[in-house]
Length: 114
Length: 116
Image 1 (cartoon, each protein chain N blue to C red):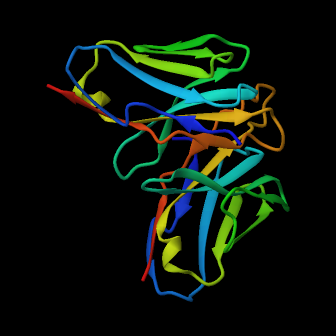
Image 2 (image 1 turned 60 degrees about the vertical axis):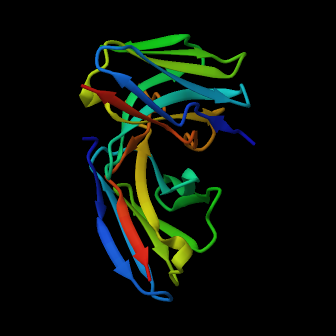
């Protein structure tokens, strides 16, 4: 059974510092990996999707890497801002079957202090 | 927004009553999912659908049923609600009708259910 772990569970940084969020998974036979952001009381917003054949994806200040062989992904957020404060979740899907059923990590709660 | 509407957004009910949550999409996506989110357990898949009238169970399906009679609507029913079903329920969609189906999931805003 796939297990996804995100460490640390919470992170506090001063504004301007780069954020590094970690995600590890136990079964390397994944179809893709997705990073989400969740604000309190809100739904999940998709940030980046990395297909299993890719090593990284970039969007603005966000960069996500994927190392399937070691079962790890890292989300980098450059020059953090208070508006980046949220919970970040990673999720992996197994080899594509009927839909992409995701297994989620527990999330990293980020606070960016002005 | 990915064109996903969940209703109701908030509901308080009593143990033993039936509850139906609705997910409506305007994206014509093939796959639809119901997840629940609980402190200490994260997000867990309840049921999913891979087409009209085609559904299957997720990891926490006991006590829940689903139906999908139209592409755009996916209903989650709690036949007899229990306090353990107090949670935030999220609907998600994936599988665009276009050629580039990346498998990316898009989530609704959630439905907060309290069972007293």
